[in-house]
Length: 196
Image (cartoon, rainbow, N blue to C red; front, top):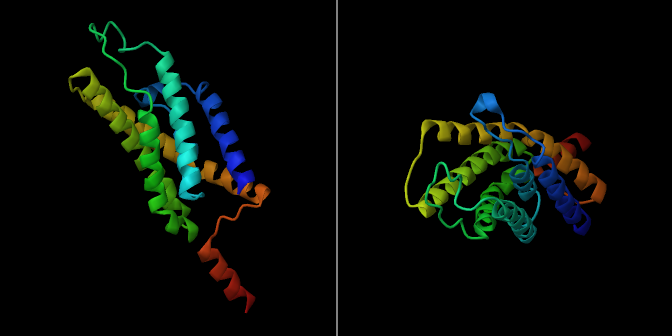
């Protein structure tokens, strides 16, 4: 378990680095592939709640640290009166909520139905981006939700979800390497049936 958890932490750190080199997808309303969130969500399906919370803290802390360094109050051309940024730590709470969402369907994942977790990863990214956008609007004291914003959030979550099978494949390889058992009850039943 410790070896697998350490490999997940390294995988999250690699996702943070790779995220810096993934450009926005201009034809898809400047949507982005949310690599850190994707790695976190897929890993949340494979670990118990305490490890998920550790990963939520790590991912949220890094996300907030990256955003805290940037210009506060947004672009001065768009927001002439700068406001305080979101408080440090909000991403940790959002990641924890996403993680518990993934933990909720973990029994399906353990039965070998990883497709549900893959689909839920897209929904979770959509809810994360929507909640973040609503929090930013609340802090700025106004509300603006355009069609372009909705499509950017939708395409970001959709493109991110399409990469989830690749991340699950990588997690299965890491689990094999670290001798961590990701139980697949459905596969065990099939193996027993073939044994007789």
